[in-house]
Image (cartoon, rainbow, N blue to C red; front, side, top):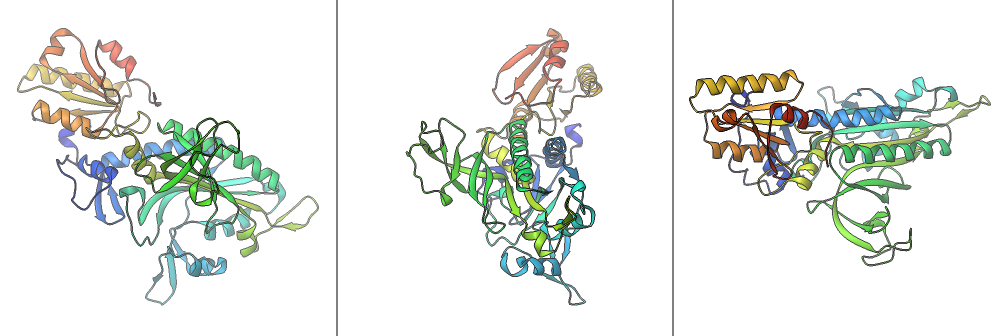
Amino acid sequence: MRQSRLFTKTRKEAPKDEVSKNAQLLIRAGFIHKEMAGVYSYLPLGRRVLENIERIVREEMDAIGGQEIRMATLHPSEPWKQTGAWDNVDVVFKIQSRTEKEYTVGQSEEEIVTPIAGEYATSYKDLPVAIYQIGQKYRDELRAKSGIMRGREFSMKDMYSFHETQEDFDRFYAEAKEAYLRVYSRLGLVAKATEASGGAFTKKLSYEFMVLTDAGEDDILYCDTCSYCTNVEVSTQNEGDECTRCNQGVLSRAKASEVGNIFDLGTKYAQDFNVTYKNKEGESVHPIMGCFGIGITRLMGVIVEALADEKGIVWPTTVAPFKVHLVGLLGDDTELREYADGVYASLKDKGIEVLFDDRDARPGEKFADSDLIGLPYRVVISKKTKEEGRFEVVERKTGVVTFLSEEELYSMVGGREYQG
């Protein structure tokens, strides 16, 4: 992509009503556009980031047997009334049509997915099954805040699994937990699986996946020796206490942002919709159900909060909209421009995603924009680098500058996985 043709442009200042780092930087860099509190449009650069996050999530969900579907966004009110959520869940948007029928726009999908599963998973031979979607969600938040980390409209991956026995659910639950940790690792984040209450969904213990960040809305206690982590709200322990799991570490307190959760829903929704399957003895039995959520747009915001520096965004290689920011200091030198065009074409031919700053702008402006946008590698082409036959390469994460030959450059920027 030539930056001169990019639909968006950078800004020096963020909107005055944005206080969160993620919204300020993403708006300034041209990734998102604010429509109202808690609602954002995702522009070309932002869309590419979301698609890369979705790709990683899909790969890990597919690897544990998940099958992707796409469910309706507009829901009739009847199934929500059947589960009690219509009156008991306060973030549900309620819509009345011209025919006076009542609807909602999905804030979760249990009311839709359970009857669907009931039509197809009718025998023990059909279980276990796990189906998921990545789509828009809508919640009537009284106070949308934290930029794209807590909104009224957002993108989410939600997976639902159905099982014969509690033992089989526990097996899949453990697999999903490990898959979630792989997702966050591939995104360049360190997440902790945090014990928490199931809240409105279930009274059973659940896991929330938390990334430590000062912008977080949750307080957690975590062990400095083992993997134990718990939400302060459901814990009887305090900062400085000895870890009750390993009996060696000490609990520390930190702010964190939730980036995913997994719930054991038991048979609640299967009972609500009288969904059953035939077991080996021919009896009708309610399946045990699980819910597994990952906030896609929230993850994008958390990555910015956790990894950005004073200059701007720092994207991990795995999710960056482009891997290379090719910055041309070309002036009116026709020969140099042709040379830069050739390098740009060569990078693309090798499958390397590249944003080419071919604009007629000052070097300082180009470098500042490059830092703000935050692509993993900045490759500078100038009259000097052309004469020396080397490229000046700046790694955004570390600021390390190297001078590489063409072959060395392609070797450095060839892969996509995160180099943490």
